[in-house]
Image (cartoon, rainbow, N blue to C red; front, side):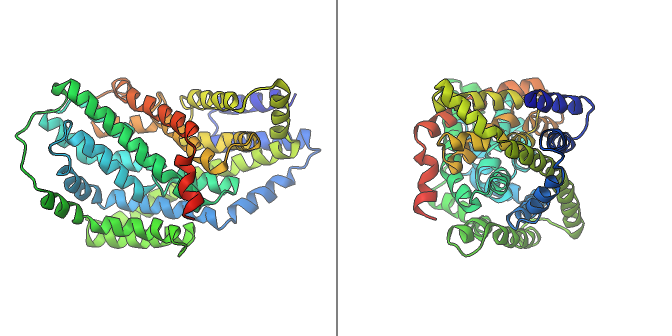
Length: 430
């Protein structure tokens, strides 16, 4: 009866085009009313407690920081500096796309901001030079997903807030997997370009010395300062994630005015857009908290764990089932909404089976990244299509991104086989 009510209510509310937050919250209230003896007042307490959490206030701050960096045009300077590093590597600027996405992800925390900022700079330049356009959009859509994994990460921040997991440790846990995925993307590009020279233009190789490359990299030292202002203060224990986010916003604004082309008009637009973004995320969070409260009171996760133990399923088969559910649901929901919607069941289920919560946070984030490049809802794909002015359609962009989609799945396999890739830094440096 419970599962029938849960699924039918979610489907019915979704069919009315109601916002996801409203669908989740209404479902939770119905469960509290009819299965917990009318204890709907518990939802108010749950929502109040979550919205008053100090760590949750970091979310709008990181959103503001990402909007400021997107509006200030800093991505152009980063792109110009890193393009010299790969000038003699097969694929050239295709590798630059991944590298810049990695760096920009470390200061934006958002997949969409990363894809939009780097794509707006890279696509016009690369299409004029004669790069294969499908390779270009694939590298931009795939590389853009790194914005969710490279800390500071909005998904890890929301995950930590909802599951009461250390955000600092989650950020540290995302560093090695984020760099690993970036290297996997570059390795794929290298292999493709070595096998097919027509994917990139053969230009006269410029003789750029090591010192010139080093000078070019040192020219973006303000970006390194901003990364340290956020991640460095967290790692060294100088600031909490929320305090570091505040420092990051101030530093990003100063960097935008002094080093970028940020104006007061753009800054006001950044605050307005950040408020809209946070409002949509916050609404989903509120609905998910109400649903999580109802599910928790009824002991649903514990019942699932007991059922799995009775069936004798290995925990890795359960993990595989969860991964398949995320991949399928990624076709229908955007990443952050999917995570918030599923955590009330997935987190207690998998941690109850013995999976580490830090490791699980990184795995869920990668699954969200997969959803970002899965049509028809994959938001990274839509962003890249817009960046190309619809020269490359959604279908072609999705096909070009399939290799990165598969590499993200490979990343999950590697992290499952070698969990220390996630847990080493949190366990030894925090």
